[in-house]
Length: 93
Image (tube, rainbow, N blue to C red; front, top):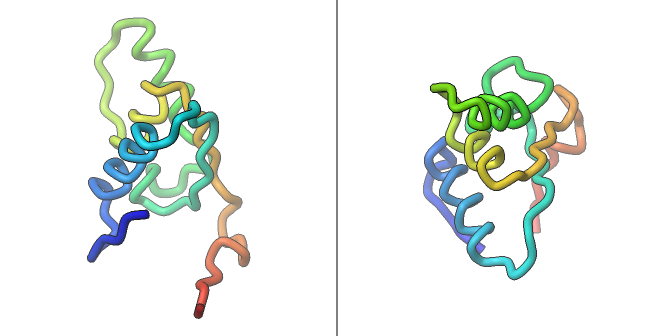
């Protein structure tokens, strides 16, 4: 478990990379909300599949590091539906 002072794009990417290194099995899927730390604002689906295609074609691309890490590690990045109440509930315990 990692605790960080702020949730930034860099922190989101680092947490994912540390998770990939730490778990003994392959990470197949990650589920995030539509927050801009993990995906482009307004996206309803991950760009990871498009990034994988671009990498395979040897083309230059620009992407959020979190989604790029998903693409490079063959991780399915899924997004919750916008304004899903369950994804915004915070634990008080």
